Image 1 (tube, helix red, strand yellow):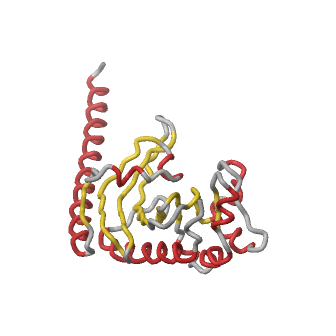
Image 2 (cartoon, one colour):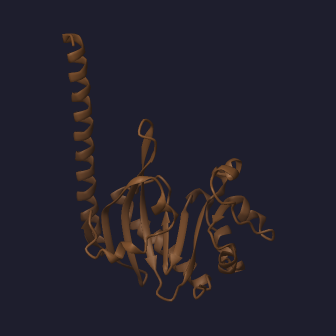
Image 3 (tube, one colour):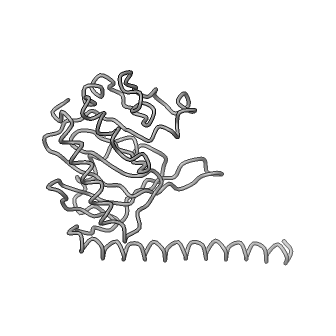
Length: 229
């Protein structure tokens, strides 16, 4: 191998090392800022590992089956609006080894011990209308509420249980949400998760994120017939 090729390889290695170093610095900075915010919003900062591993075992909705190299970081636990709450950054890698990307989002999870929800996911529908046949199960639509079906894509394996959960009050609640929010809401058992797909929340915005998502979770639980199995 000639000198020119060795120089090119050396430059490439240096560039990769610099990119990794910058990424590590940014991650460390975000963790430090997140830990500081956790103290101000009454949450316990747990870092990259759950202090109680059982706290992650009920996180089994569609989000947690996507991609590979799945990872929780900046975990916070506590309560909000009287509900057990968990906030965390969650990432996974999608695509092939030659063409892949890491998807990051900040997720809020809330629990209602009285709930027994079927697994469901409700995502902004406008992004998927032209791809319905390529994205897994056919979405569940409500003929009596075309606005809901236009704005959202509702999926889940137990259609009958999901239809029983999405009573008129629940459907009306979602129709009343600001579409600009682009919220994804998933649920199963006693847990509801709320996040914006592919979006991490800046540490300075975490207090508002906690307020917004806990309010939505509380309203959802209050509208839903939570004893559904």
